[in-house]
Length: 376
Image 1 (cartoon, rainbow, N blue to C red):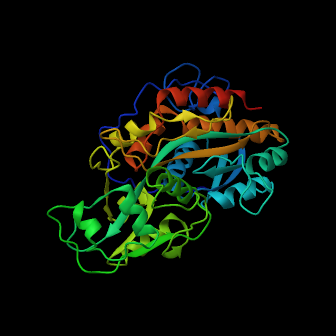
Image 2 (image 1 turned 135 degrees about the vertical axis):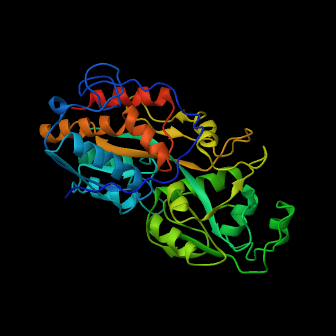
């Protein structure tokens, strides 16, 4: 069935990731869905493919992909795209099992085996595809440290204090370590209630990568999609956001749009360059420093979570669509290419800014367009 558009969340201003998005049609070197030429428009009827695509994975990208699907299906009414936001880990597993046509993930496929396992995500997905699996970044999703604390409208956290809250070393809101970095604020003598993602999650992976990189002394556990800190587990982004909304003293990590949608407090993060409010512009400063970690059209990005650049918001994730570079069904391969170009079109990227996401820098966008053009 067709997924209906969700309501817009408050507009993000000042996004510093602008840059011109080169646009082209289904056979172009572009990551947008456009007709021939660099117009930045959506495909017309002649460009539309038909059929059904099934995707699964990241719940952090749920709001973004629902918007992309709704707009795509309006333009291409004979195409259907279904997306099940079960979490990044589940999506990758379903792609490997051949149950879906693409997976959404907030972290790229790993080239290393998990602890206690000989399986390697990238190799397993390559084998399942029968061709190299590519990680295509589509949009940047800031991760909010979201809280619910009566009387506290502004909260500043450092990497060390954040790590200690989430590993259980700091358990009271009036802890001296919190008071020291929040002058003029008097947090209550109240227990801190931590909520974490109980499912395998790319948001967890990126949040723990941040803690590991920015506070290695206080966060000694390895990063990963499975939570290793303290707290109470809830499923998916909606689960942790709803739990904090219902709990005075609650705190979690969640994709920005979920924090905004639930009207939660969002902590400013001080990585060493001063407190930074979560805004599109602040996320742009951080993601512009990302380096490509994969080869060729496998566009894995390495983020600098420990950046101390003034005004850069350091806790973020890149949402990837994980696809087989050579489709086993030519009709579905064409439909997937058309949809991905629509997802990355300039007008769609603008809409994603309005619902709590930030587009990728123009240089990364150009690499993605080349990759989509190379799908077969």
